[in-house]
Amino acid sequence: QVQLVESGGGLVQAGGSLRLSCAASGRTFSPLSMGWFRQAPGKEREFVATLSWSGGSTTYADSVKGRFTISRDNAKNTVYLQMNVLKPEDTAVYYCNANELGAVYWGQGTQVTVSS
Image (cartoon, rainbow, N blue to C red; front, side):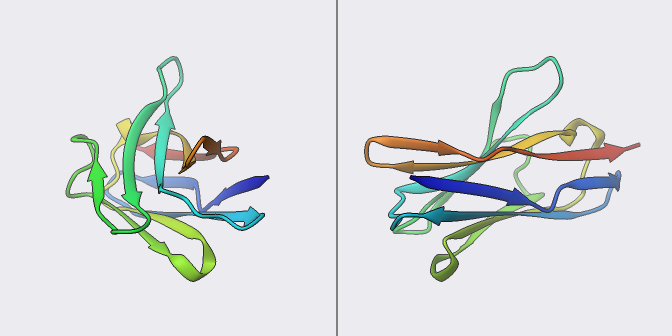
């Protein structure tokens, strides 16, 4: 089994920055991709960013393009989300996601709160 553990959430003022981390542990892990989703109160979970594990290509939601950057450390099986110029509408629980052939894994989530 694979476990994903997020960290790095917190409270920040609008315009500030946070970096989220997601570390995968458990059995040998060979993801096709890893990424981030978020869910604000009363809303559906939405896609934020994803990164192809083999080629490193990235995709972002329009709402975060130019402000958020997804990156990885292959040796640590860790993916990061650098969030800059945060806005109150970025407030949500952020979930790490990993896709292997035939399986999808989710972390427990980390709260990000952006005050105006």
